[in-house]
Structures are given as structure tokens and as C-alpha cells.
Image (cartoon, rainbow, N blue to C red; front, side):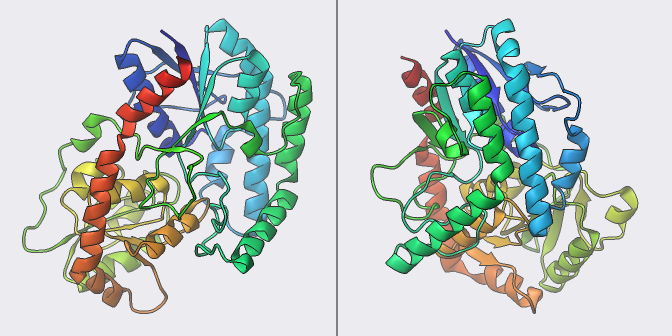
Length: 405
């Protein structure tokens, strides 16, 4: 039996996905421990957590998390990259001692935390990489995950994507410098320069083929679908759905929910469309702001799957976990992306005609159209069948065990 170290960015969505996989491996007789940055928290899981120590000059995690709620513009992008490089450096500095102390003998790492690959190589440990967000694996015509470009595998599209990758490397110089520096300090035989260089030979992704952009065979990862616990399907609702109106579930995740003006606009539009609105703002609104939103059920946290099983439409930011949860329940999407891979998810929703991106203009008409669109609903239900067949957490655990064997 193995003792897995779970390494990921200290964001709730990433932690929750790895927690589901870790718990399944524990159920099979293994051990799993989160190894995260100083100050990181995990909730809703029995898995143990150990922190690497902070160092003088490291950014406080509270500041990093707050900055992630408004990562707009070039300045916000550069700050996000710099923060990520600092968190990676912290893990590389303190990780070897922590991993040895706790007897970690295999690593399951999020694709977006390169320290997982650096530490696995430095200590000679088996490594499985998981794309908790959109996969960063390149493929002809597939834009970078944080772009809302359409799929285009023509010569022009491939060249455009290559130019974007070159631009991304230029603005990611802080991350590249950190990876080169820690490759040297950790004594790696091969210098790594990008997160792609840090991936394990076995890769899992939460997407399925019917949702991701087209990729040639062989796929660079195992498309297992969302990593969830069976208990995620459960949960009592703190309100009674109105049977006379379609239910619209709206959330911007745990980082982007502090936008009272956006919520008020949605509240008015959903009411005008004749539907019942249910909002989960992720604890980002004060009680006063939540009370001022308008018609609807306003809550900090709600059991997503339990609500989506009853929903006719999901309005969200395009976070990977929310989008995949909605599609696993066969629910069409209306996406308002803000940052990170949310634009890439919006592009995939539009590409596969699983919903729409929020447009300027008449939001009421857009909501009404999606509520009445039976063809979009049919496509979402078909994708829900594909997601169910992908295997999810159980198949991911099978692949992890096979990699060790």
C-alpha cells in the first residue's frame, strides 16, 4: 500500500477534486495526505494536511487568495503568475523535508502546481498528474486554457495558437525563472522550464472527449470525468423549490462571488424570465450585500449536485468544477467568465452547443431562450451519459494503482 502526497494550488476547487481521489485511495487501503502551502486549508474531508513552512518574504496566503478574486488585466495576470511562482518556490524549499518526514512514497499533483513534478523528480517518487482545471497539454488547434478562442486546427489557427504560447512564455518569466532555479537547487539532471515539463507520465483529466476541444489519438491524458465523492450527490436543500417555476442555479465559485452588482442584475433578469433563482456566493458577500440582491434564495454555500439535479439552467463563471457538475446533471449553461481557465470553458460550452456565454444586451431574453431550448438540453443530457461512463473517481483510482504497479 502506498502513502500518497496530494499537492495542488491552495484553492478550494483544486483541493476538493484531489480530496475525492485521495479518499477513494484510502478506502482501498492506501494513505493520502495533503502537502500544501503554509496557511492553506482543506474542508469537508478526513484526509490529513501538513504544511510546508513559510519563509521570510513569502506572500501571505490570505493576500494571494484575495488577489485571486480580482485577477483582471495585464497587471492582474502578472501578479497571479508572480504569486504562483512564489507558492511553487515555497513548496520546493520545504517540501523535501516534509515528504521524507511523513513517509510519502508517491505524489499525485495538480497540473497547475509544478512543484509536484519537481519534488517527485528530486526524491525519485512515482508521480501522477491531474488536470483539476482544463488540461494544459498542447494539441493542434487547442488554444491555451485561459483564452476564449475557438478551436481552429487550420494552418492559420495553429500558428495563432503557437504565437499565444510564445506570448505566454514571455509574460511567465517569473515562473520560468523559479522552475530553472529549483531544478538546479534540487539537483535535477534535466532543467525544467514550464509546468508542462513537470507533468508525470501518467496524466488524468476531469474533462471528457465530448466536452474538451478535439484532440488526435492517442490522447495525452486519461479523460476520467469529474472527481467527486458519492456523497456529493446528496445534501438537504435549505429551501423549498417552487414547482411552478423553472429553477436557475447561479454561482461564481468560491473566489468570484463577491460581485453584488452582477448578482442584482441576474436576480432581476431571472425574475423577469419567470424562473426561481438560487445563488451560492461562496461566502464572498456580506449579509447586507446578500440581503440587497433581490428576489431569490441567497446562500453562501449549497450542495451543488443536489441543486443541479433540480435545475433547468446553471449561470456560472465557467470554473471547471461547476461546469462539469452542471453537465454531469444534464443542465445547460450560461457562462460569464472572469479569469483563469473560465474563458476556455466558455469557449468549449459554445463549441459543443451546451449553452451560451453571457452577452451584452437583453439578459432576460437569453435566459428565456435557454430555458426553452430542448435541443441544448438534449445535448447536455447526452454528455451527462458520457460523463457517467467515463468512470470518475473510481477509474482515476484504478489508473493511479495501475501506475504504481
